[in-house]
Structures are given as structure tokens and as C-alpha cells.
Image 1 (cartoon, rainbow, N blue to C red):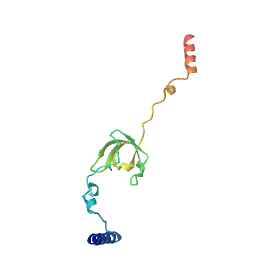
Image 2: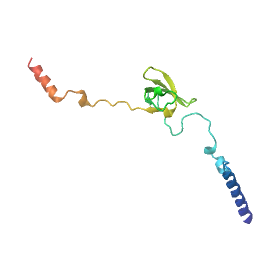
Image 3: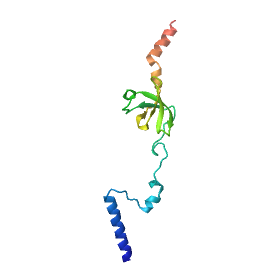
Image 4: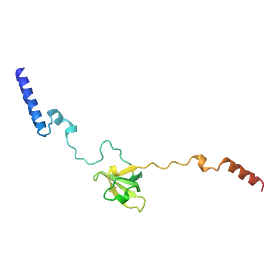
Length: 134
């Protein structure tokens, strides 16, 4: 029991020294878990939902091409190898590759309410009345 306590103290001291020196400390348990293994597969972060082709977006946050900021575009596809969306800018038709953080989904315009597509009731009555007088 004394040998175990001495070994544990020595191991604890080794981890503290390594951490203090700025070295990453990974336990054997952590090294064996898949989450500790680096991944090299390209693609969106696991929490990101991909925008399907045809989605309307707005270009935002570009520094190299600020003239495109605020422009409307349409998603053509997500290119996993580049970790970018290929989008077609509505004005001019230019296709560009943009990082997911540089596109913002825009909601389609809702249809007009039925009342907005009809003439007001008093106008409808006047039209009927005028048609009856002919």
C-alpha cells in the first residue's frame, strides 16, 4: 500500500511538472478514446447543418471581396474538400466559394395575405353596382 501511494505521488508530480512546462498531458484513458484522436476528414463541423442546394443566402463578413457583402446568392453545393459552399451571386451570376460563416440563410418572402390580394369590400360593392347600371 505504501509503494502504491509513493508511485501515485511520483506520477502526480510528473503530470504537474509537464503541465506547468506547457506540455499537453494526456492520460492513457484519454489516449484510447476516439475523441482524443485527431481527425483529418474535411467537412463541416458536426454541429453545422448543411444548407441544401437552392437555398437563398446573403453574403456576409468578406474582407477580401467586401463588394459582395450584402449581396443575395443561391447555394449551388457544399464542397467538402474545400470546406466551402459554392454559391451563385444573384446579381451578375458569378460563382464563388464561401466559408459557412460567410453565408447567412435568408428566409423566402412570405406570400401576401389573401386580404392584400383582394380589393377592399367597398370597392367590390362599387364595381358590382356600376356593372348593374350598364
